[in-house]
Length: 67
Image (cartoon, rainbow, N blue to C red; front, side, top):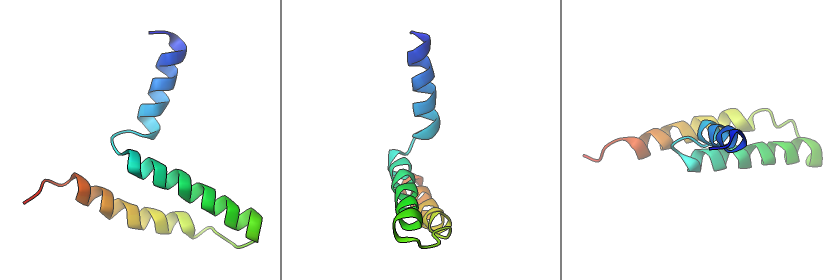
């Protein structure tokens, strides 16, 4: 495997990991935070903590075995 491909695979595994849905939600959250802060001028510091507070239980519930 080439060094460039190995480097890319490392970052893919590090960022996306096992749950691509959480990775997509974080990227969208960062984009919305940027748009709110720079486009609308709203203090958007609260959005990412809120997103993590919502995503963490959802991610854990999806990984828990069914009863």
